Length: 382
Image 1 (tube, helix red, strand yellow):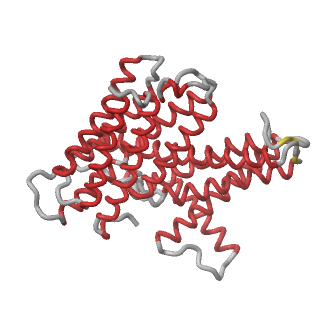
Image 2 (image 1 turned 45 degrees about the horizontal axis):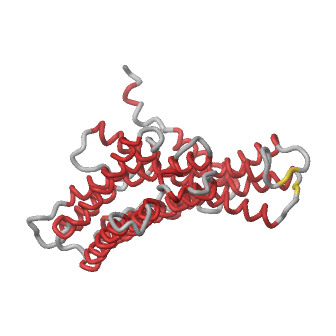
């Protein structure tokens, strides 16, 4: 009983680590300031600390597993090991940093729902950063392998490569995940979805997938199917988590906007949740597993998105006119594309899905940027 009052004051693991780092810096540089008070400088310190930790771990792993001269790419090579370590490092670093500064909870939700929302947000942001790290490092390694055909590197060079890749991934992921805004998340979403789909297209063994539909990329257990379905699942989680930014931002805008009888910002936020769940559902249930469930998720996503575009002028009455006009153009373009698909049959299903996906992604990115710009300055995160 007597020990209970002291529990709240017990420092956590993160605090003890920071104290240890501060003590080390104070010992090495007694005349320098250990840590600045601004959030930006503190984030830079955490990013650099994460990079140093990742570099040490990667260096130890490299010295242990590399023996003799190895090619840039192979089963045990600086390319494959660096790719894995960069993805894992970015995932962990972004997850840890975002856990320190989580997205705001949606008002009115229960404690259990808020807790689940926070877990989903952290998982989505961590996995997106890990996926983007895999994409960039994979492209970099592919260029190097093509440019240095037959090159073999020794243990020291191999270790340096994986060390630099891991450190860079930890540094960039920490900075990105610690300053989350609608604009940043829209950029992450666009890069992640585009990169994942392109990788799935390049790695598919079905050269004629485009004659059927986009979902054909998710069929099978190969790399293409895994990448495609994982991209949809993680992208859907991120899109659903965006509601935690969209809802409070739209409420802040609505509070400063002229009164309206038709405005309903909560419905727009829930629309993001439903679209995200449907997008993830398309990846969870590939077309070869259950055509009915797969098409239900895909159709639900299209219906909700179309409903948002149609009702936007009333749901967001008073929003930027240029964006509402852009939304009408997007809706008209989708309608024309649907007619060209059926009954005109000028476009096949894959082409129609590609056009629709491009329109949806472009609309989401521009909408999120408009929300960020319309939010009062004091509501922006530090």
